[in-house]
Image (cartoon, rainbow, N blue to C red; front, side):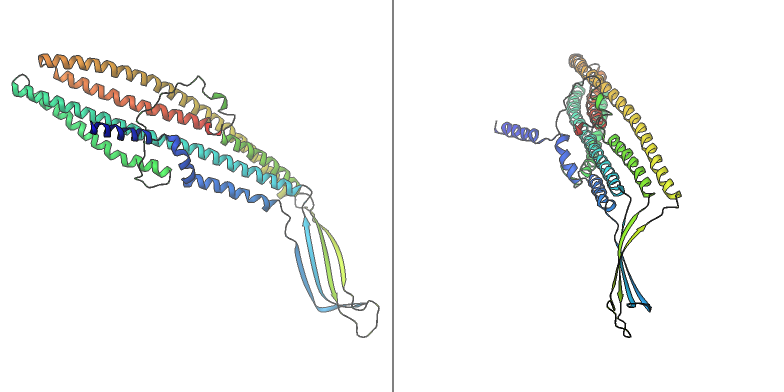
Length: 409
C-alpha cells in the first residue's frame, strides 16, 4: 500500500508540473536571440529620428590674411565666420515623421517575429508529445506481445500450439523493440530543436502534458481578423505612409536652404594716423541662400519615393493573398485532423472489440493466432495515427493563431 501511495504521489507531481506550450512563450520571448535581434532593429530605427530631425551643424570658418588688407581704420588681420543653414520650412519635421513611421514598421516586424516564434515553440513542442505517446503505445505493445509469446510458448510445450506462432510473435517483438529504440534516439534532436528556440541547453528537460484537449472551433474562426490586425500588413501600411512622407521630404529638399551667419574681422591699428575708430574690429551679419538648380537628383528622389509606395502596395497585396491561402490551408488541416481523430477513436474502439473476440477464440481453440497478432498491430497503428492527428490538429491551430495574429488581440 505504501508503494502504491508513493507511485500515485510521483504521478500527481509529474502531472502538476507538466507545462503547456503557452508556459514556454515568455521564456522564448525573453531568451530567443532572433527575437532580440528584431527588437534591436526597432531600437536602432528609433535612434534615426533625432538624426534626421535636427539642424545640421553650424559651420565655423577662420581666415588669416597673409598680406593684410589695408582699410581706413587699419589693416585686416584675421576673419572668423559662423554660419547656420536651415532647411526649407517643415523639412526636418517631415524627415522625423518618416523615420518614426519606419521605426514603427520595425516594431510591427518584431511583433510578427514574436508571433512566429510562439508558433515555432508550439510546432516544436507537440512532436515531443507525439514521441512520448508513441513510446507509451510501443511499450504497451511490447508488454502485450511478451504476454502473447508466453502463451504461445506454453501452448507449444503443451502440444496445443505451433512453433510458427512463437516465431511470429518473436519477430514482432524484435520489430517493436527496435521501434522503441529508434523513438528513444529521436528524443534528443527534438529536445534540441525545442530548447534552442528558448536559447537554452540542448538537454534541458521539457515537461510535456500527458494528454491534449480537442477544441471545437466555430466556422470562419477569427476569419475577420485575418487582414485586420496582422503585424506584417501593418508594417507595410506604415512603410507606404513613410514613403509618402519621403516624397514630401524630397520635394522640400528641392527648395532653397537659408543660412544665417556672423563674420568677425580683427583689424589692427594704424600707426601713421590718429583716427576715432582706429583698429576697430568689424562685425557683419550674413544671409545666404542655396540655389538648387541641379534638379535631376530631387526629381529622382521624388520618383524613388513614389516607386517605393507602389512596391509596398504590391507587397501588401501579395502578403494578403498568402495570408488568405495559408488560412484556408490551415483551416482545412484542422477539419481534416478533427475527422481523423474521430475516425481513429472509433477504429481503436472496434479494433479492441475485435481483438478481444479473436483472443477469446484463440484461448479456446488455439487457432487464428496470426489474426490476433495482425489485429494487435492494426490497433497499434490506429493508436499511433490518432496521436499524430492530435498533434497535427494542435499545430494547425497554432498556425491559424499565427496567421490571425491572436497574440496581438
